[in-house]
Image (cartoon, rainbow over all chains, first blue to last red):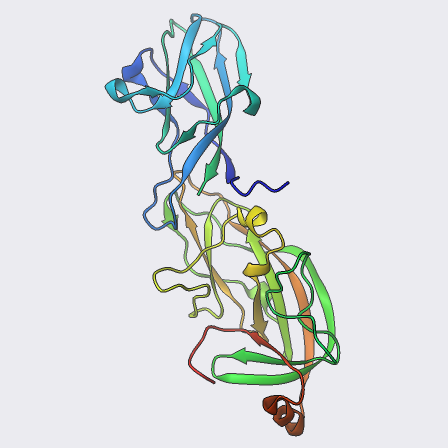
Amino acid sequence: MLNLLSGIRRQGGVVNLPAAGVANAVVVMAESVFASMVGNKTQVLKRIKIRSNGVGADTWVHIGTGVGGAFIDRIPALRLVNNTTDDYVEGDIPESEFAASITAYPEAVGAGSIDIQVEVDERG
Amino acid sequence: MGYDLFPHKSGIGLIEPVALIGHNVCVKYANDNHYRRVIWFEPIAPFQFLDIGAIAAATTSARTQANNLQFWRNEFGQIRWYPIDTAQVRLYVPNADGRMNLRNLQVPVDPTIVTRDPCGHLTEFFVWEDRNPAFEAINYTAVALPQCRLIGQGFRFVTEELPTADISRIRSGALQCTYVVASGFSGKP
């Protein structure tokens, strides 16, 4: 059956989460806001891939919008075990629709490094 | 003979030719009405007719000529199309003539067209001889597009001029004719 709500599937780049804490949240998928486009765009989270490189710490990774005091979790934080790669697909993720850029941060990084990549359905 | 073929045909199903061999057509281009009879036609399978090229983030491309959609003399084309890269694409037929114009904006086509109008009925346009279309792409995303490709499909029609008597009969309503528009509206022809 046709899903007339479906948009364009897009993926973000591989983004490093450089430091722990909400003040260090970074954009993992930018909202499309070009003034010349027709209509407004929103993003529906469809897939998340996270990697911890093995020299860091087990941590929670938050995904939402905003940075610092403006950050709002849009799904429950995900538990990332050190030295693993996690893959959450459509069925694992609430169909959260973002009308802003998607941001993320870990609660801890330790000496390690965390990379994240998301895939969205861009509606509009 | 009764025609059940018409431009932008919106019944269930994929693209059908707008006319068959022996049918009369009037290709409207600018202020000209080209009354013709179809003497031959063939399908044009889906193919990539234009790559507008790389487009920086949040940028509109230059208007780009789709020379691959030119036809020979006495021919016209019926084309449906969609982009396969993340952009909103505006159609011009010919180059200076924006199509799908509303009062306040020119409607673009993006890749969602394949779910919203799966048969591309409402993307259909016509090309008279070598008066090819041109396209502009709006890369509305926050990342650069390495390419912007457009896929087209349709039919190529070879025609011959109609005798004056037949044109008169068409104008009086005595002879059937399918009218197709190959340019924007430029006043009553």
